[in-house]
Image 1 (cartoon, protein in one colour):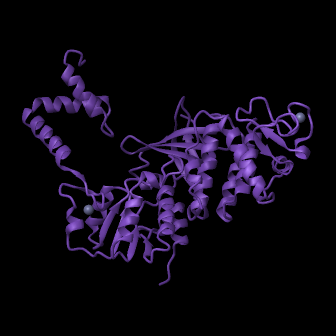
Image 2 (image 1 turned 120 degrees about the horizontal axis):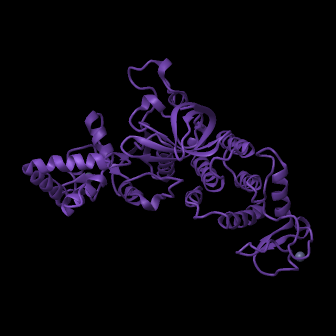
Length: 243
Length: 197
Ligand SMILES: [Zn+2]
Ligand SMILES: [Zn+2]
């Protein structure tokens, strides 16, 4: 059987049978794949301490219909900076769960791969912030084709970055300006601008949300993401434990 | 194959639920037991006894037949408590003979991707034990997985203002190993966790 080598991030792990592990990977060339690492729990020699959540690896695997078989891994980084901080682990775990739930299986998406590795690299070197989290969320949504309709009011077409917006729990009808819709979650013009700018900016740490924007963006993005996934995010409970 | 024996089918079904046992192994084990009725009775009795006698210690939450367990009742150092994920971790540390204090079993670890939070573990009980006793040091012996590390960091924060010393088991390069064969993940941790000599 032909084997291939690819860059990957471990986005999920599950113990399987007596000594195996099911590994969820997000790879550069093959997108999101699930693989089996035989003997991973018993033999430290074969996979080292390498098959760990968030680890960035070079992985060699053989293709099959459902689960690929992981033959060899080489670690690029286990991100020791993330692992030594509770908030780092919480934010990286959240990012991995979003990729697990939103990235389609076996569809390469190099832009998303760059976004995720950039976020993990950033979390490894600096402390986790709400600004970076929202920067990641909005870019992930944009790259995967879930761009929220933040440009103009769904009713009158006015510029939301100028007039601000109101979104309702269903989010189905789009976002309205304050004149077209009275009820719902608020998005100040400044918050809309920051979210739009985030999608144009290529680097973490450049865009800083203020307290009000953080509050508004969090409520909006959580609702928007929830409306696009099949089950509630487990990592949110963990994220809320972060001081 | 087993359609003519409901009880045999049931036994195979139960055996299959055990870790690492598939349909084939379950059948093999079932037929092996059938051939030796004495073994069946001994196994059934052992299972019943475990079910009726083994429970969790109400102090440390390790497994025991008498509550509190022998370690909690025994003549051990009361000032130091070792926090582990699972009861089998107590056995692993006890086998080494290196620890003379007491234990606390969390019954799991905090896990971002499984949504396991402090309320799901024996963390409130640990806090209560530490607050109401003469414990001076808490040794955190959770695994060196992401979840184990997250739990260790969380506990460290929890005990920051409790006037106890919090320590973590050392990790790094296994005894007797050559540096050139160490995987890079272990090496990264060993370098990060290096200590003064
Ligand atoms: Zn409008
Ligand atoms: Zn006990």
